[in-house]
Length: 287
Image 1 (cartoon, helix red, strand yellow):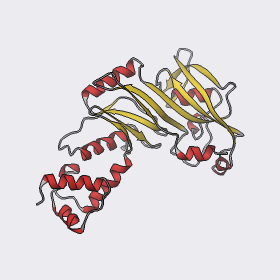
Image 2 (cartoon, helix red, strand yellow):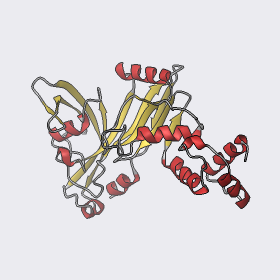
Image 3 (tube, one colour):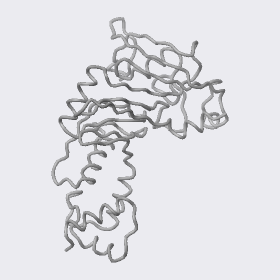
């Protein structure tokens, strides 16, 4: 049997994508390496290779002792639901269990969500203190989030505010306007206007003009961005639920959480995270 210390370092070597010798491969296969990963008695070299790919697939944007921020791809749930489909919550828990070789249960706090067809930066708490501090910041609206979207059409002015009284239609599982709804404010700024490029036409998107917008909202109400842009006559590309045009990726809409700012759990230092819009968007918007 190989010592735990050796196997731990060797596992990290594989996770980093470094080459291993045949001798090391045989020792891995025969050893009782992080058996806590799947509750298996032995892990094959193929299993370890799978975990190498898995670790690469979880794109960590920031991590400290209390907080972790990852990229959520479009089409993946933020948290588990009754469908039992893959979720970022489960993937991040497995990532932490694997990376830190935790033999027991892994704590992970869900402090906010992104809609399934949206993509972008998603925060989780690794500790109860992290969950408490982040939740407090969300309640006090001190966390700043910025989104970018591609919409069909062009707004009347280069920047403005959309105001609506929104509520949730439980039957349709949609947000819509109600006379007694909650006030929702959406602040937008035009980044780029493009005539329908060939790349979009080839994907079946047919409006004459499209606009890339930067979005901020006061609070994250249910489907707020999607509903308010649709009500303004500028539905998000791909968001068929809110009258947006279909495009090639039926799992995705052109909504991405690109920026977030928050305070660390144990000090007042502000962390500013940013990412580019997805490469596919950049290709679509290229003239």
